[in-house]
Image (tube, rainbow, N blue to C red; front, side, top):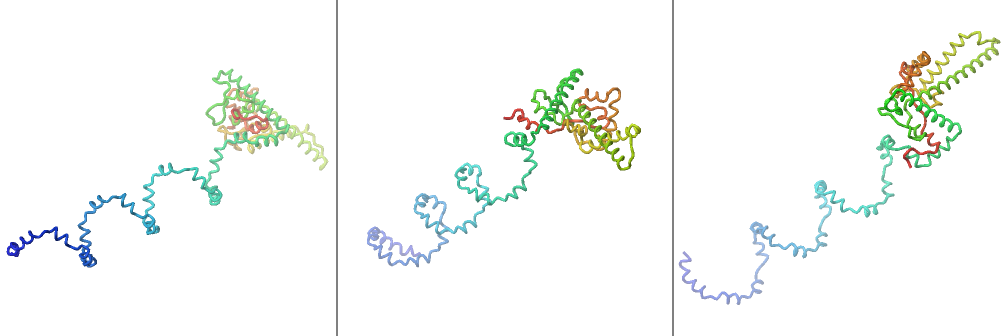
Amino acid sequence: MVDVVVGPFVQPVVDAVDVGDVVDRIDVDELLGRIDVDEIIGRIDVEAVIARIDLDKVLDRVDPDRLLDRVDPNRLLDRVDPDRLLDRVDPDRLLDRVNPDRLLDRVDPDRLLDRVDPDRLLSRVDFDAVAERVDVNAVMERVDVNSLVSRTELGEVIARSTTGVFGQLLDAARIAVMALDLTLHGLAARVLRRDDPTAQFGPGQVHETQTWRLPPQDRAVALQGRYAGAVSRFLAFLLDVTLTGALFGLIGTLLVSALQIVADVTWEAADHRLLVAVAYAVWQFVYFAGLTAIAGRTIGKAVLGVSVVRPDGTRVTARAAVMRTLAFPLSFLLFGAGFFLGVIRRDRRELHDLIGGTAVVYAWDAETARLRSGSSPAGST
């Protein structure tokens, strides 16, 4: 209604006013000086203004390079509270986003090692805890003792400590007897037309061993645990019979002398032949059965480097030693046919071995003998 009444009068005036001239005549400084800025700001609804701002459009118009150029990093860092910043960092999420491969690719190991203090590092190591976590058995299984000895002066130490004439002669004798064993059984295998006359077998071993092309000392090492030959066994028996006979005669002589001195009684063995025969048989049984049960070998077998075991290579039992000794005389029947079985069989077991459930194998320290000879294992440098 007001526009209808006043409009016709005001509009001509407005049209007549030169706006540009009016603006030019305004004193802007005087106008701004009369404005109370605090009062104006106090009357502004900031939240309403912010709510009407389109932040995406504002950010699109921001030049980040110019913005960062105007930032003072020193002042910015001075206002950062590192404790609060670290409190808000989630290390698990941070590590999940780290690519270890890329991180390690950027690490210079030489520079890293240059900065390591080995003394401080070793001082913080608990060697007792480390030793408790080491599997000594697994470590020892991976150690090649022969190679280790051959690379050090330990071999010379062993050689110098065991270079007695008797030891060297015994080694040579055992190696020579082994060669006779191989020759005898090789001939028997050829007569029997076996596929490989040179094959050597042992208890519980799937594959045979061929040793003829090895040096004597290496051949002796390779044959350890293999079935012993007839020559070694026969010579061991002869040595045992000689030793037991000599001991029996010596002990008998001492007993007769003691009886004569103490009781003034003269005792002649010729007058008591049956008693002497029984005593000799008991003595032989105790010697062979007792030493076999206790040590797995008699003195003669120890000298020749052979030992009595079970067919699977395990330690002989007392029962097996007794049965073997009781069955031993049966091997003499039919002109020693029981001993001949050991020549033609692959396992070289004789009649008393089959009855007693035993076998005889090479079992002496051939490795030390090789060290005494000053030779190295075949193939080593």
